Length: 440
Image 1 (tube, helix red, strand yellow):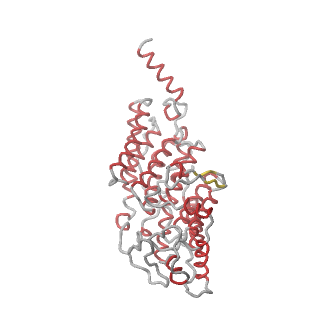
Image 2 (cartoon, helix red, strand yellow):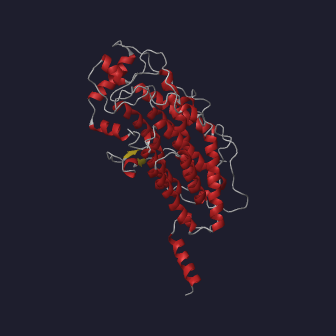
Image 3 (spheres, helix red, strand yellow):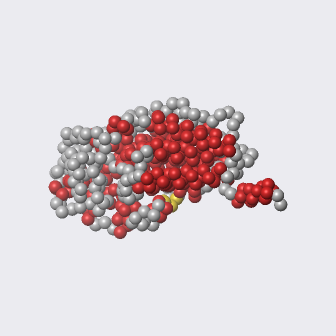
């Protein structure tokens, strides 16, 4: 057997067992013809980087959103039915497009785009996180280069880099550089937020986040919640009753309620944050439902945009109403020795970020997939500590409702925080449905 014949036989054997993304010759070459491996693996890596870098939830939501847009836009030029987001989300102008009549390997495009955008968003990351990013890119690149012709690979990688670079330019105009850190000017309201135990930090988290440009909402005030009940220390008032509910639930937590509170805690540094939890669910859907690369990219874009805008709306609302946390009220008016089951975050209570972003994410996922049951394996997939068993849900809405009530069980939100947050999030999901046409 000649060397060429042996090499050909080896290549044919490889292609016979290789996944679809490794097959360069296809009757069709749309982004819809490849599986979602690149997308789901990269967002798993991003989740781990967000965790390792101890990124707080608002910046994490921005990172997931921008990354979702970059992935989607990098391959939409090779889609059968999907439409570009250019002109459909705020401020996003023309982006590089594939050259006519030229062949592209869309998994390579996606790999290059994701590596570029994540490096850009984490330019100051630790060497360990940069190594994670480099390893993920190189793993796919080496696999693809073995089976894709050199000119096709180079053209595809260049397109991914070019699109991601322009997405980063667009993202840099959203106000993040100005509003990520700014002085806290408390709204003069009754029952105003004060630092909470156990840390009693003097400054709340990112008080100007609500001024960052949304992707789909017309402003951070769109989909705004109606406001908390009138603050009152009267034991017969609606507000006191809501605080008493937090106290009573927290004082008599069942094992299942503790499990739910822990499952959805999603603390920065210990996990990929609350928006990362929904991103992780998209990765699971991509694998378990054998989504195409394009369908997976659409799901990541939908959820990324949803959590991005949800945190902007929620943080705007938090600092407008500037409401004190349950632990503050309970210690002053019900029981001075009470503590919440989960440590209270250092920012105002109304309304709940978990609830808002869960309402938004569940709405856009239902819009794409319908009412479907699923089992969430985020904790086991990412080896989170302490370990939590997977939880199963009959719908995305059911999962969102559990995420919301978990904050009541944790003792860090009033019920009205959670209910109004869910409603605002669902409103954001509806606006995404109304304003973005993902399909032609």
